[in-house]
Length: 306
Ligand SMILES: O=C(O)CCC(=O)C(=O)O
Image (tube, rainbow, N blue to C red; front, side, top):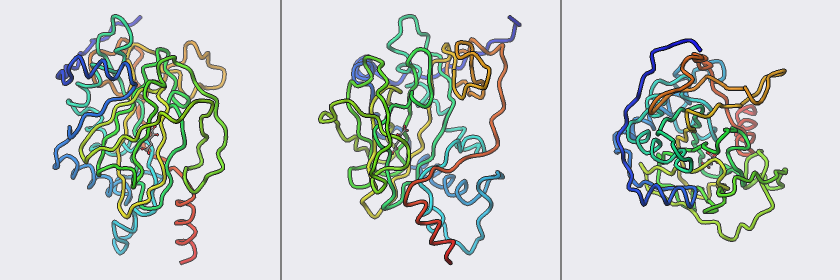
């Protein structure tokens, strides 16, 4: 193993032992108003810059000045990987308060874990009025870890409530580390085109309504969904995904690659040390992708008609 200088990222402890235990037991945790108003405003402004093609990338060309910010935002459900092009979004991935919390809960179910955390994904939801939500799913279906440590840090850029399509979760559904089967759903008015998990009792679901600036943390095995935005306001959220730095990341396994050894290295170390720093890092792709749903398709066909 090559020797490299191992750096340690120190972050503040933010949570009580009761809050850590709540996360371990329930698979989610709300931390109200962690972000200041100025921070939320910075994120909202940067969301507009990303959506207007203000950062060079192939998938979002610059939008002419004659088109209003509102007209641009009203066509977008979600932009995947905005941190690959926006230094502002990348800075929020490393936000010390968020990373302090992550260093306490991400792998708190494992003995000996030392609080080290890395990030592999960001998603910027705009979710304008009438746009669809996401059907039941567990994030580890898409991003597998080897130790069940995947965690989402969901930053509310607006008040999120039942009307505008907040998160709904089934507390404790992460405990066994079981991945439920998935199927297509027949409800494109309510949910985007991703599959839905099934085979569980959903009567215990609870809405996670939070004020602007709050964080919702949730484990990658937690069953969660969100519904259509039935309000007149956006439901903007930046959700970043992280995991224990000690676990390999067998994500997007390449042809011929062994799953046991696969380890994507386009990650950002955000707390503690990276034991695999000796492998080096893959640079982030300088691009983003846009998520589709029925409302996105309708907005596109309206603009094609004009
Ligand atoms: O914010 C939402 O509506 C859904 C987010 C979600 O499902 C996720 O981050 O995994």
